[in-house]
Length: 300
Image 1: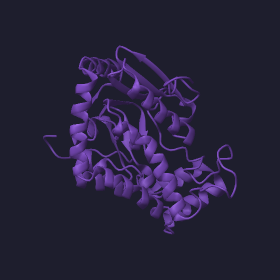
Image 2: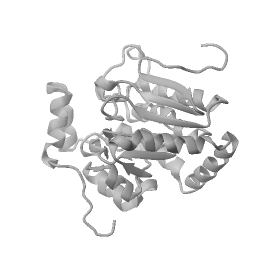
Image 3: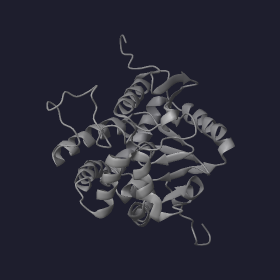
Image 4: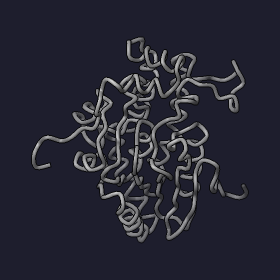
């Protein structure tokens, strides 16, 4: 890298600029675009690159393959695993240490993902397939979320793993729906998410690219300085409503939740250690059966 250039395409993301739009694509399709520590850092750098460039007015985050993002990589540090490329044993914090160590780790991850909110330029998330757990931490922190109507959005990890370390739910869909979804770990389709206000709009999957490209084009026609003014005004309103304070508090509560000795949390950890991730997820989610919420009230 030289000058002020932050990042181009890497082994976990794709980055390109065209038509005043910086396009950041999560590119671990074989891992369902799950968020590793390395990938999260590269998303942050790509957002900073896009925010710095004078040929960019708007930023897109999307996913390659079948999913937007299936969550945090539970085989890595977030799931309690080691990270030998980054840590010398005993010298640096891990999230398997004290509650403060865990909270510190979660806050550093949050710092990276929060840049979608902090960037001066608008950030649009295009959601298809699964947008779960950490995927929602990323998507819901963007300025606008557009989803395929059959996308699957939720935080199943609240059943046994912890609390969303980035909490945007209440600001999008209100307290009752935030509680309904987090109490159960249930999911909603993109169509239902649009009715709840969790996403801006939902369209058929085969129309998603065209819909988002049209939106990006219209946003990109406006001068970057004006877009920044509009975004920051709305963001100040969110901050006055406690949005930034809640992010810090939510990370600490996630660390606290990780200390739970309840039966579901304990069983998940046991299954993870003895049988692996697939078995642990099956044990966590099996009792819940079909977890997709369907709206029953008329007129929605």
